[in-house]
Length: 490
Ligand code: ADP
Image (cartoon, rainbow, N blue to C red; front, side):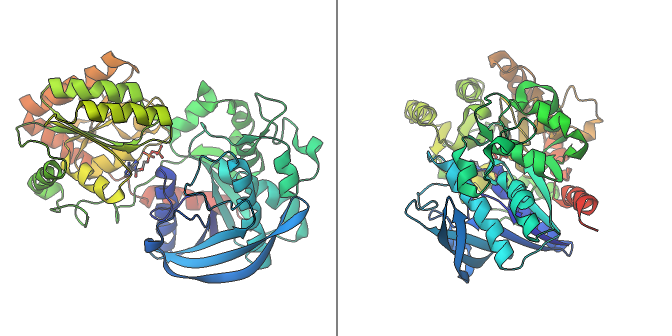
């Protein structure tokens, strides 16, 4: 099958969170299975250009309709670790993708609406008619709308669209100007509850809703999150729309790229190890301690890796630090935040714990370092308020780092409590707590730390159980291929 992926992120060149990992990992697995995959991305100025090989101009003068004129774009082509990627560079006074950031500009709605229009215009002008267009999150929600309303009548009748929702917290709620900008010239038609009108604010346009309504299939990143966004307030207003379209909606658990995240082959850690050579993991613990100036003591290391965002459970992370330190653990954090106040809060904590030989907070984004944190720690904390899928617990499992998670979204689908899961012991792989408060968190941390100290052999079995789990792209890629097969133009 010929598949074109249109996405705002792709690891490792443009990665903010799990979405980037998913775009790369799924594309890789689809190609391994004999499909042809191309990825279209914006050409951000802040990308990791050292990870793009053979960058060259693929289409010099692409004129993209925008408001009542056209914007000239250059489309570049390059390989990202073997994946074929096209990068769209607009030449306009707004300089959409030269902002030194991926997201967070006041005109993000326009930046990504333009990207959608430009991606389709490029496909149209260069004669690309794939079986499947796979798009991701609100940033590409306009793709199926534009395809159906503009490009299909022009003759682009072959492609069908699969749309993956990674997080309903950001839906691309915007105004009428986006319709005029992107060439959808009948506002009253699109401002309809069955199309793009926001379910809360009747005067606003919801780009993610457009993606849901116009796609041939809508997936989200775990079965549990699929249920939550149909039946609880996690949907943030889109529950009704998802219920209306439930026959083309389902949850497919994300995978992890075990070529990148695998302690047996990882080039970024001091000593490689596997389930049969678990002792070697502890050399990475030593390396992590050296890197973060932690003392060498008989204590487990608890880590947190992720965006410092409300979603990730800021109050519980904050509470976990003194709790772990007071209960015989070391604590390590690697994270950055987009929110000024949350960053400020963690910088304050960093200062507070600066001289503590058992604690290190690294307020940074560092892909290579994250490998050592996963490999060197014994437990990984994921106390999220909500979590569509979550990759850090899956990576933790592969590295024999026992996850301690809150029971929400994809965390429920992937982590099974050592004491309470309805599973045989050999399938239990972590600790789970329900309540989003200090008592909930402590109930799980207390059990995990107690097990490490009192029953080290049992704790080791838990580590090994996690390492034996298969959360590779093997299963999810098969599911996505079944979806593609179901919807493609036969
Ligand atoms: P989300 O997509 O909500 O950010 P996920 O758990 O799905 O969360 O994915 C997070 C991904 O981003 C993981 O691969 C994690 O290792 C990576 N990551 C997050 N923060 C950092 C950081 N500060 N440094 C390095 N990698 C990070």
